[in-house]
Length: 436
Image (cartoon, rainbow, N blue to C red; front, side, top):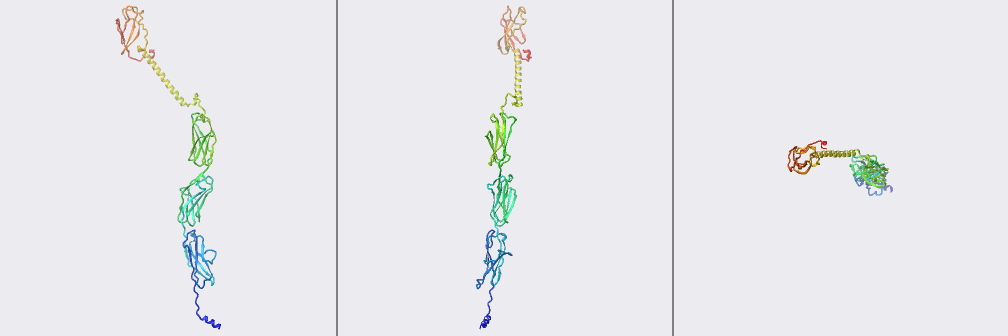
């Protein structure tokens, strides 16, 4: 009976088993961006009569297995993908009972990168200035960009490359361990992830250094300063970042101040009086600490106006030359005036007192010539070019007569009242000794 049943079952046609389909690999997203996650799913469609078959799933990129081993879950989560993760992906589905392995078709995945954008440069410490000798950090960052980014740092508008870094990050740092004055420049950075370089803006870095002790120098026109001299007090700090404020002190009292935008020294000019005697020093300050110079003594003397050494030889010679010329001209003028006065006195009767003249009488009835004492005097009667003189003659027989002179000829005329007329003689040059 049992044998018959078995033969009956074998005689019936057996239904063949349905073949297992290929698994299908799916990626979400199918075109991922760099820096984003991606999920791989290996989809296997089992027949309805075998829903409880145990399977294992393995994932591959090119010929490399992803993960350490196969897994029972049909999903593989990749937290972050990069451009280097682009490639050919596929999966395998393994059926444990019976042992069957099915491989999916290959699926090409291209991981997309985002170009860098909004590149900026910052400094540490902030404020874009740093003390000399301190550390300066240049921070280059991008707002967007994926994949490996190469950062470049440059100094100066001409672009002197300071350093280069490549890293998968949106920011990178470049460090200057000890800043010097020569590091005060313009800086910028560049970022590139394969889509082309992107530049930041320029920033100015100021390197500040405290001022050194200034040097005060006195510049005077002579070794011993005197009242009225102009002296120059020059104050300069050889080191220190600009601008620098200079102050001049006279006996601990601020006398003047001046600013040097370029950092060089300044000069103070003083027109000396006796009150300027004393000690001077200057102070330099650029906001990082004031420094003072050594004191300089200034002794102002009062000039001795009786001493020739207080006037320059040129001034003295000029004064003596001027006075000598004036005196010489005065003497010359007096000499000429004296000669002129003597000449006029000899020739002009009006300007010379009458003096007795003893001469022999030309009259017929005159007594002995030795007894005659004629004399004349000016009558102060002037008419045109005529001068009248009264002539007196000591003769008993005759009355005083007036003799008329015409030129150098004298007429022998006797009248009761005769006026003498003299014609003015032409002025001629005579020797000064003769006029005297």
